[in-house]
Structures are given as structure tokens and as C-alpha cells.
Figure 1 (cartoon, one colour):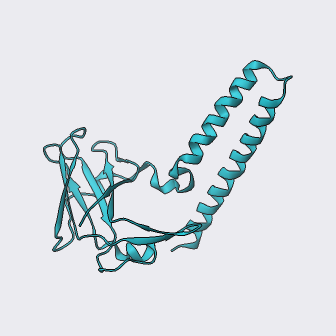
Figure 2: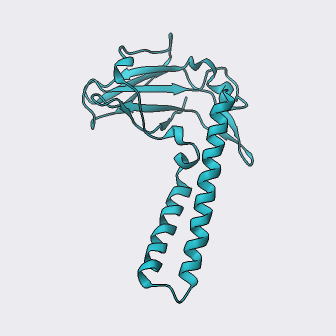
Figure 3: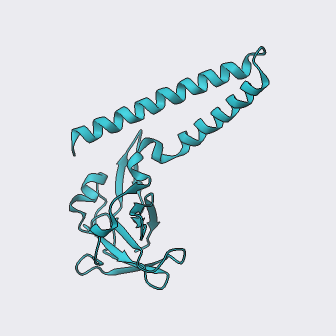
Length: 182
């Protein structure tokens, strides 16, 4: 992976943490100070609620999982992995026919893969579906479980990710996950 990408990501996380820590300390100090104005105290409560909300969102730490923009005309025809043996139909009744859905799953090796980079390497288990009659048909191979090393190692269940590409604007939804049993 590109070191510049990871450097930017780590700087982003560190800056968010510094700002949130400062907000928590300042808001707590204001709430405990009896000489502060009631309006400022209420504002501090809202600031604390906002920080808790941001701390609980995965997009705070991994901003690339959130909404983004890519010209939708780059994605033209449906694409599926050759020989895919699983079909999933996702309810897209809230979206117009012709809306595009990009999706990807971990590779199918028959083993638990040691990290996400190897799990998705080459993106051979990915594709593009187009919404028709309120449904998007996803065709994949059964994805493997894979391990994620955080403070401790966890093994993620079989799943695929997808994003919905807005038909007219090119905005792409935040990443969504669909767990599969295969």
C-alpha cells in the first residue's frame, strides 16, 4: 500500500483525537465551573454529545468508508466475477432503476485469510450491479473469513461490501456490509 495514504490517514486520526480530547477537557471544565454562564454550559453539553457521536462512528477513524464522489459514467455495464456461484438480491426499492451498485468480497481460497489486504488482493471477487425492478443482483464466490489485527486479533464473518452510486449526481453512499451464510 502507498505510504502517503497511510501517513495522511494516521495524521487525520491523530488530529481528530487531539481536537476531541481538547473538547472533552474544555467542556468538562466548563460544566464543573460554577461561575460559567448557563448558555455556555448547555453549549458544552452539546459539544460533549457531538464528540461521543464522532467517537462512535467508524468513518471518524476511516474516512474513506464514508460518502464520496466519482463520476457515475465511469461505471457503464454490469460486471460479475467469472463463474460466480452465489447470487444475492438486495432490496433497492428506494432507488430508481438504473442506479448502480459496486460491490466487493474477500477472495475465495477456502481458508481464513490473515489480513484484509490479502483477503481482497486483486479484487477478483467484485463487480457492478444495476438496479432493476427495485433489486440489485450481486454475484460472487463465497467469500472467506479474514482476520483483522487491532488491539487484539478478530476474525470477521463472511460478508461483502457495497456502495450505491447515485444515478444523477455521481455521489457514492458510505460503504455498507451484507453478511452471507455460505
